[in-house]
Length: 238
Ligand SMILES: [Mg+2]
Image 1 (cartoon, rainbow, N blue to C red):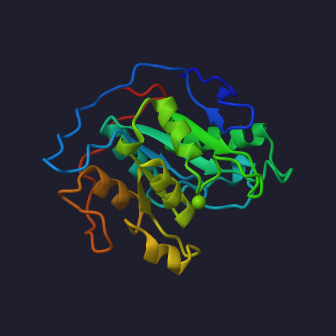
Image 2 (cartoon, rainbow, N blue to C red; image 1 turned 135 degrees about the vertical axis):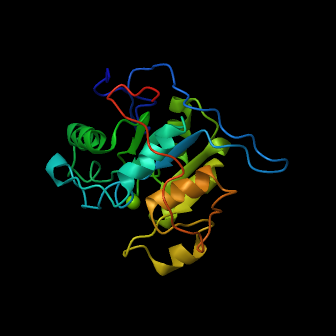
């Protein structure tokens, strides 16, 4: 796949966007029609990076320290297999703190994609918590930027993350949010989550097949709804 190395930024002070060259979006199968009165079918799933897709190593710019979270590869493959768009929305205040560079952030992104496969967009906030930007979660800017890059409606997008700020960003953007807690997720954030799941694979299964496995704390475990497709670097239907 052709990757534009630094892609572009939407504004000088906006989020960093890393995205592959535009390509025809593959459709493995059409989404199920929504029952009357139900939410529209999902078109995209955006994942938080640290503590969600990969283990949280504070301010990590070292690709050698990237370790996927349990079930991450299976979860993103299920989403790809349904033909939905995939993205990452990540606060990286280490940039503002002088601990990370754009190249280090990009190097970690490349390693994550080696391990988990390609994502349609990475929207990264490089600002610090006191800069008042509109992109650092819980603000909605990263979700808006990722949806714009993917060409999807936030109302047909879900955000999966490990802390309350991920869900707040989703809510502010009009997207759905699902919490997959880790041992460091605060109990009040778990209690406040509209939707939660014990692991990533369960989260995406409940998002994609809510009639089979509704979101909530009492969902059931089981095998993926379908076998993930064979995945080459350029993607393609099985
Ligand atoms: Mg996180």
